[in-house]
Length: 108
Image (cartoon, rainbow, N blue to C red):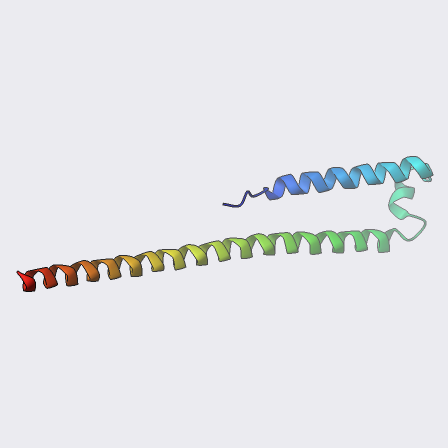
């Protein structure tokens, strides 16, 4: 059985890594913005920056949810196929036991 890492744990680890990288670069370059409004505006490029960031974030989240959905679908399909295989094996075993019982009665 494969060990699964929950999506929340992955998201937390990625968030921490991104926060550390962001802090490193902010620390190295120094904070160039005097106020929060200047940070949001980003030298009149804020719309592009924040729109790009949000589109990238939405795309990554969509891929994460789609992969979780596909993972569940594949697991359900595999479980159905295993149940079907078990039914076939049980039916073959029952048929084999029935034939063995009939053959023993004919010999006797």
